[in-house]
Image 1 (tube, rainbow, N blue to C red):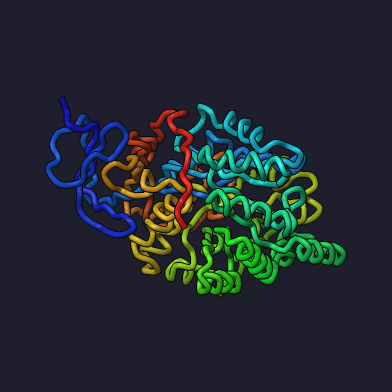
Image 2: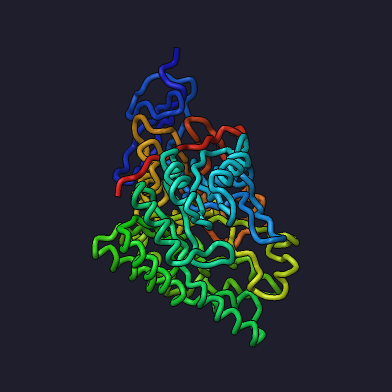
Length: 466
């Protein structure tokens, strides 16, 4: 009888701390041994000349999420987790949205129903709190944290989502008492409304004016305010999708005072700019997301933040809407003004190749920092570590095998999502994750989908230490 189920042999293994040549043996879905001459296995995979990395964890993903009337998100759990696997990811953390007037527990049950039997990779849900009633704050949230839902998100903008400062304090207080982390979309809603109304009065309604309506001060002010509110309750927060230096400086200052403030950035802030919102007709709608892509100086600032530790995690903020679709970017209302274009872009499969090629291959970050930003830190911050996020004995065998000599031009067909475009079309990358294992089973192997829909499981999470 074979000693192991699978041995990945001859690869270059990297974690957030070390890089070494090592064979990886897998038994019953977990890493059972690391070393040389590990014995027999039912299957031997030759990884010579390849990198063997922890499969990515994408902790900012929107799948099957209800939107505004007439808008339908492109990816459900089947297509979204399939795309994640093709991009080298083993776990994604989508958001369960509570609608106002709805029980948070009921929203979560419905969301589990959408995911059941559909996922190729593992999932763990964040909770979006839009209606922090006494019952939600006093009963549902504490009980759900105890059940393993240890993160929730609040918005400072968007109709039907934005909370008042008082409501944010109430949610943060629950986070403080339970140990959960509160994720914050930081943009000043009143400022956005003021600028949008003024732009429309001037006839400036094309997609490129989306960026004008959400300038850097809108994000910087909200970041400052979110941090101040968290300081009042001594709560742990994550500022998501940070796009620029002034917002980064607010985060740096908070940390210099010892505040438990985490931060995230995304691919759109590294390789897109506000110029991508231009184009003939509504083409610029393909890059409409919030905060919007900025300028080249902001790109460089975000790279600096990835190098220096301002950013703990690098996520996709995958929020997909089809472009040529009456329920997507070209919805009937969307033809009249940027105001009505669904906010969000797809990116779940492009995230890792972009960061590796623009970061590691070009010397901006090293390989160990890449692993930390794309897997290990996500697991530690969101309560999945040490089960996930690294390659070590006893961990889930969530592994991506990379071909680092694979020049590739990103095209939508490589990403295997249900969208009809990618904002990263044409970007040249130097490496690609050719195989992805989730708990010891191949989901993608040598560029082909071989996994079973339904293999992906929901993972309850612990409360992570500060």
